[in-house]
Amino acid sequence: MTFGDDDGPGMLGDYVRGFPGEDGRWYLVDRPPTEVKVYDESGDFLHRFGRGGEGPGEFSLIRSVLPLEDGIVAVLDDPSGLKFFDAAGNLLREARLPFPPTSNGVVYADGLGMVIAANAPTPERTGLPLHVVDLDDGSVDLSFGSLTGEYRLSDVGGASRVLAEAAPGTVWAARLYEYRVELWTPDGLERSLVRDVPWFPATTLSTLAHGWAERPNTILSGVATSGSQMWVKLRVADEHWESASDENPATPDLDRFFDTIIEVIDLDESRVIGRVRLDEDYSNFVGPGMIGRTAVTPAGSVRYEVYRISTTTPGSGQVTTVPGFIIDRYSLIQIGIPDTAEERDHVPDTVHSAATESRAECT
Image (tube, rainbow, N blue to C red; front, side, top):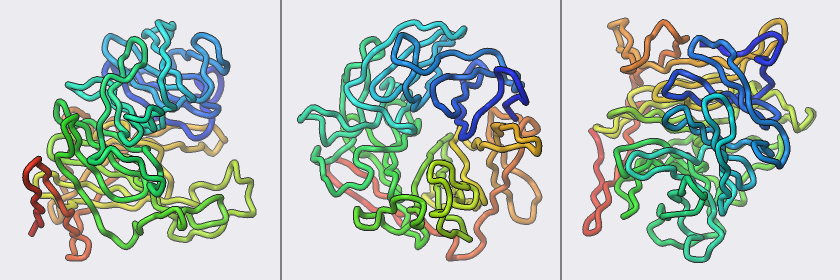
């Protein structure tokens, strides 16, 4: 599926992010991130809403778009805006959050509601990165996501988390600078998936890269789940990386600077069942087994392309598809099954409870 027109209001700028709604509509945000462009499931432009500014229905910097029920769309705007629109793009209401939202740190979790990852300013919530937000006024109903409740200055990335849907009453939360995905409930930590791989070294404050002249740190930038499978997206330095210090730091050649690694984890067996490395920086997951990227046509027009992620079975030539999606509607990224002992890395899986902690090593 491809979005974007050569001219007119459906044209796209660079660095596009897509957010699909259950009604088949897609909500796209490009640069400058001050308006939302709406397309139908065929990729045709419908309308747009919002503009730059600080007035009603205006945006300073859109962080995320969260389609809700009945065509209502929630837009998280930096520094602290939570704005709701109807299917036609009319402003319904606005609320003010007690913290600035992040781009990937929001999910509507069944049984909880809207969960946002952020640094809360109040002392009793400072060390708790996950917050259930009241959709009427933006206030925090509940905070969780830490075993200690303590805030540590040494935490790289602070309270930033990548969030994904899970079973009712739970949410997956991943840190940016380490390969650790945790399953949280308001009662505490239920499960941790941790990967120890040489291409994802630990990042500390002293090793955090700044600017385009330094080799970029590996970042866990996306998580999506469906049933017993989890997709993890990681942004890594390009295999042929070289310093971008000679380029405009605002617009470096990201395809030369970054690669994307996608891994598929079997949650029942706690092991990696597929992996692929892509020579580009893909933007975001748009659902289980689906990912988007910004592309440019030979004529210079920007497009937003959606790809399906699928695993292949060695020797069978068959593709395992994701229930609910039609394979010929999307371009396909095939992920090969790791076929060496080194590649079949097990994911250390810790199951937490109030009384005991057990570590299951897969064989």
